[in-house]
Image (cartoon, rainbow, N blue to C red; front, top):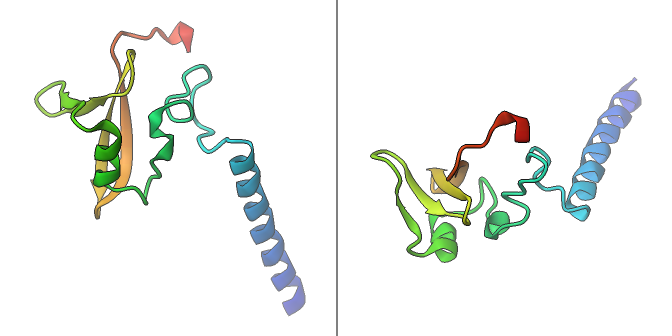
Length: 109
């Protein structure tokens, strides 16, 4: 009985590890990105890792390209179509929010 439980747990751990390696190998680190946008995979943001990267890492990438879009939103220019803003928790990157420069109709997503 004990051997069965241990083998089941090891099987799950191994399958998760292999799945993670496959995603890294196939450069699918951001599987939730919308097709055709590639905001993370194809930009200078691909070096930032949520939970690991710090505000200093962000500043190395963007330097002085960040500004206030509105009163409460400080964002950086990602490219000619997008802005990005960052949130930090305990000095580590917590989230990134993307803002399009132009409206994007849902029919094009």
